[in-house]
Length: 305
Image (cartoon, rainbow, N blue to C red):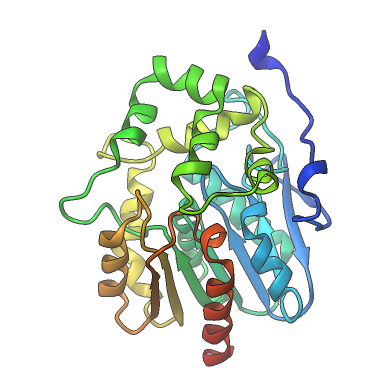
């Protein structure tokens, strides 16, 4: 069957954008890919869906000059192993457990600066709450640590993918709908061919797109959903991050994590440094890499470990 075929990921057309050495740990029985560049204080980056460590390439290039920059690929994403549903759970709990095991194997002695985006927010910040003594700074970008703000719900297009399996399975797994549509919906500027190829490269066949579908299907809406309790834990305990220096950096034109989410972050963490870049979308680092890099430099400088 077509869906059983696994294709090699071709990096040729965008290797100049992502010239990093690949590293792997065995995490809970699977090959877990990560980038580890530079030396110094560790800056750890956690991606969302449907991106991968390629999304953080501008930060890796710039901050590896003075920091140890680490960017992971979740199981089923990027250059990590891509198991099937019989081998892997594809739930938020699996993601957090994987990331925690990865960090344990990394065995860093210094406190980390944690950079999160999209699903990486829930994954990285649940880890942070479990390991507050290991977190030195937090940088949040277009993500959430709470249930949708009052009056908000997930966008209709996500609901369709989440709830209608007869549509979602062939559309996302067969035609790569989620990854391809994000190239046009998540960024406000026209992406180059090389960037487009880089963002969608790991999701090049039915089996390799499974994680992009499962992430959407794992969005918790009510108490019966698998990941509801973990998001509830994150929502109710996020205040414990208040004593950690935080930078809230936002793309103001995000169609999912919109201004209501940004405002909720600012309300919850009034002492955090905050910046909303009005012209940028969900793919903040594609729309405004230079502005974001400069703002993060300022934040790191003003909040030494």
